[in-house]
Length: 74
Image 1 (cartoon, rainbow, N blue to C red):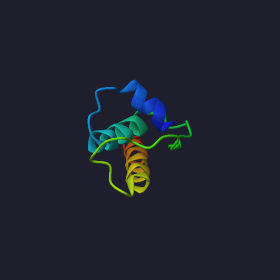
Image 2 (image 1 turned 90 degrees about the vertical axis):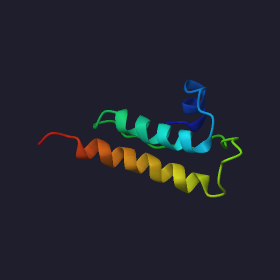
Image 3 (image 1 turned 180 degrees about the vertical axis):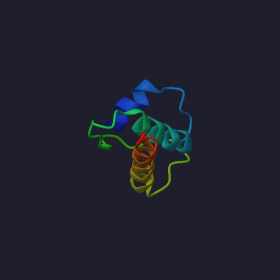
Image 4 (image 1 turned 90 degrees about the horizontal axis):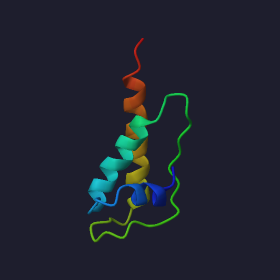
């Protein structure tokens, strides 16, 4: 998943923390059998973007993937 594509598909995102929630929700929505990796091809241009934004977005993506696995029926 390219960060630039995610930003383009969600123009209503108005701050970094909305982007973080969007990354997590997007990762959660991918099918279980699909390998998903967040790739940083752009830097978010929000005033609220923290210095360690890549770490935060990577963690959000991983949380989304774990939530996806937790919701799989046994």
